[in-house]
Amino acid sequence: MTPLNYKHLHYFWVVAQEGSITRAAERLGVAVQTISGQLSLLERHLGKALFNSQGRGLVLSEAGRTALGFADQIFQLGDALVEAVQTSDSESTLRLRTGISDGIPKLLAYRLLSSVTSMPLEVRLICDEGEFETLLADLALHRLDVVLTDRAAPVGGNLKVFSKRLGDFENGLFATPALLERYQTGFPQSLNGAPMLLPTRHNAIRNRIDRWLESQNIRPKIVGEFEDSALLNTFGRGGLGIFPAPLVLAEQIAAQLNAQPLGPMSGVSEQIYAISNERRIRHPAIEVLCTASS
Image (cartoon, rainbow, N blue to C red; front, side, top):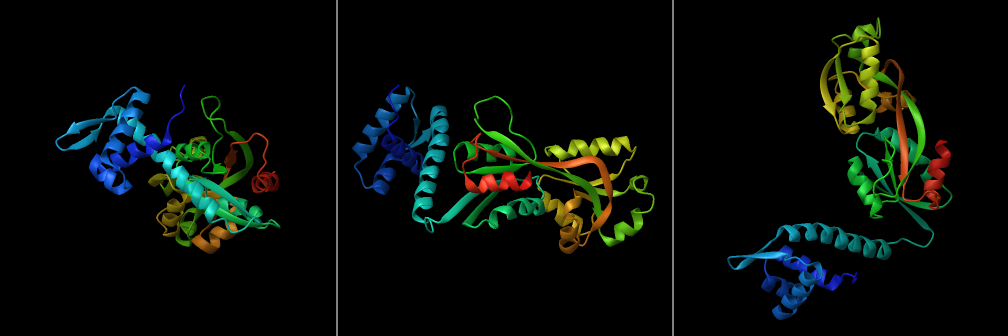
């Protein structure tokens, strides 16, 4: 297969953004005929028309919309490459681009990543937050070095990524002082009808919490479900309901959220994984992260 000509792709990308070959030519400082010719060569290479005429302008065809999605990723990655090289602080600075899944408690992510920031080398952390599937896609495109998430990467498929379990962190239920006073006596049966904030069912820990509630024959009043753990904690701090969190974070939760442990949830633990592109870890900071948590 003949390699793709990225100059042709770039002309297509600009035409798609401008909606006109004439405006694209003005933006790029080249002749209209040049862009038309390069665009025709790209369409011939792909075997599909990328645009349809609409009045005096152009609209993307179905194939064009598909091509534009890939072109966006290609040129955004190229911009990131240039920025990474040009803004590199020094040869001695180690960069760790980390993706943090929405559902992971942010205080727990901080606890895990603190081992990296205490390395002898100067480390620059770059942290992104997002949904599990989006972060895995960014990892596959090498926009990220590692992803911290609540589940292992799926086995099989096209993604060649590898999972390392960093630990299991037992969860408990936390409450602000008013809720603690009301529901602590008789725990856990006191939770029947109690207001509760939970992760959504997209989060791996939700099924474990539901099973625990069922095993205790408890039916709380669920007043909120949250994809983002930080948002869940914000509502918990406001006293809207009792909320789950790793017991190992009790001190930080007391200081930052004004909440205390109401009681443990036996068998419910937060499982945290580090996912990387390498089976054998070569990035020094990822190696420290995996070693410190084992």
